[in-house]
Length: 456
Image (cartoon, rainbow, N blue to C red; front, top):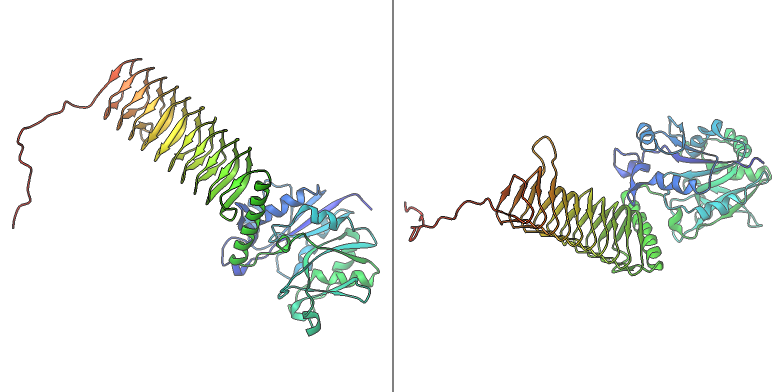
């Protein structure tokens, strides 16, 4: 048999019960479309070709998967799983074929590898699962020798067959030769009026092909999504797996049930993560990092020994280490913190280099700026970087002191060791070690009568 593998992913369904304009398989789990989870798992098997059968929302799927190495087959009419697989038949090679589902996102590569190991010209593979409540699933019918010989859909099952708890997952593997022989023989003579792929099991038995079964490590692996409740349940199952893996690696989680990783999270030793935190994209936390409750960190690297206080939002930021961030800080893309730099409560930064030991303690905005070492930025300071059309740069030298409620109108440079007096609007460069103050002279009137409300 040819040493080839074709993976066929069925993704043509509308997902009516999701009550959404978005095709069901494009709904996200852990920040990524369900079908992308399936494709990522399939890629781990190193298939020769991967085919996605599309129908409802076909153009949306083509666009969403444009960067994936897949070919598309179109199921214009929804006539069942057997009909869906038949749309990809002409694209298959001469080796093994694995049929997966775009709305079964938690399937594991190890399970699929075990299933594929059974397949040759005399054997096919079927993934089954034993459930306490099999309602809604097709049942596995076995003969007196214990071999799987048929799958009966619930709507077509007898009372005895409904009592069976071993269920069909829909995932199966066979050779392309077997599939090409069986698909044309499918019939729509059933309660749904559809061509069931499951009917090939009985065909295999009749042809003398042994049906070999495997079961997943957990039922969640093969659970599909038909509605929002199932979507939420699988989200928590996925996050529970991630939390367990992190704790095995030594990460301390205040509550494993209140963590969301929507991408990849890499942690050094002695990392602590409090409740309600969300990690998106690619995030790295260095050794000893502590993340307070309800923080959102996206595509960022937080260096060793840093502390992120509660309710901080960090996006596309690099913190060198031993940094203090938050609470309620917002670090926007392009923020770079040198070692021991501090960005405090209600501070927003964007495209800002903050030098070693520098502090922006509270209530300030610093954008399109570079701060040297040991700069102190007082509360309420703003770098006025946008003139309504273009962005401009602010440069602040080492050891500069920016007084509270100052506005630095870019482009502007504040020299090393310079001081800007509180309440100043600085629109011209400030020399090194100079004091710049622009606020008006204070006036005072003795015994000034305060206005009172008029009586009517």
